[in-house]
Every structure is written in structure tokens, then in C-alpha cells.
Amino acid sequence: MLGADLTHTQIIAKIDTVEAVHNFEGIIKQADGVVLLRNELAMEIEPEKLMIAQKWMTQTANLASIPVFLQSQVLESMVENNLAGARQETMDVSSSVMEGADVFILSHETSQGKYAVEATVLLAKAIAEAESIYDHEITY
Image (cartoon, rainbow, N blue to C red; front, side, top):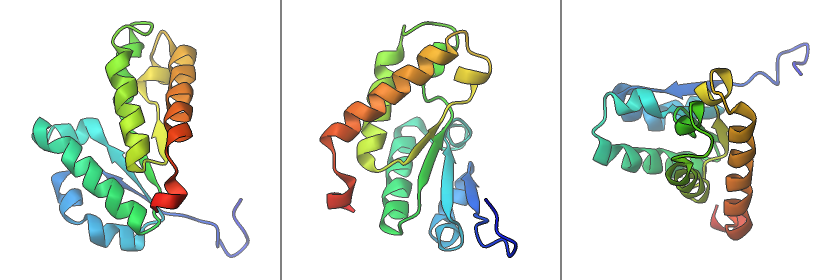
């Protein structure tokens, strides 16, 4: 909740362009968190470089104690299919947790998906499993 002096207001910076990636270190000095919009970044960054950029931004934000939100195409296959194709996506979620992602934002999976509840349950299970074997406090 916001106090009378707005001391609890936070800034979450959206990173969705190459320019934002280039300015990332300056952005995290001013922001309270960052949301990486992977589908928008995928339009500007070559596929073989996108995961490298995500990993670098996650690590850089973690070292600055800035939470990282991942949005877009988290469990995209579950918009139309119940678990079909989700294996690769859950591996991506697990890897992202172990890299230091703090929050996953489901978009189409819950707003338009036929399997919104199932996608949410699967995401929670994948996160819990990855967190059970990785200790962020020791690493960061």
C-alpha cells in the first residue's frame, strides 16, 4: 500500500528493445525492478543471442539486488494445447529460475488460453522444483 508520502511507490522498467538492453546498466540504477519482454526482444535480437542477453540482464540485475520479471512466451504452447510442447518451456522456466529470475508473468496463457489454470499450476510446479535444488541466497 502507498503511504501518504508515496514512499512505497516503485518503478518497474520494461525492457523490450535493443536500446533498452544497451541502456540496461543505467536503467537498473534508477528502477526498483525490471520486466524482460522476451517476445518483443525476440523481434530485435537474433535468436542465438536472445538467451545470452537475458542471462546477462538477469545476472546484472541480481548483482544489483533488482528483481527480474520475465514476461511473454513463458508457457505459450498452453494457450491452445494442454501440456503438449510444454516440456521445453518448463525447462526454460527452470533454467531462468536458476539464473536468478524472480517473477514470471503469464500473458496469453491466462488471458486467452484454453488451459489457464493448468498453465498456472505447471508454472508453479516448475518454479518450486527448480528452487528446491538452487539456493539464491548462497549465490547472491
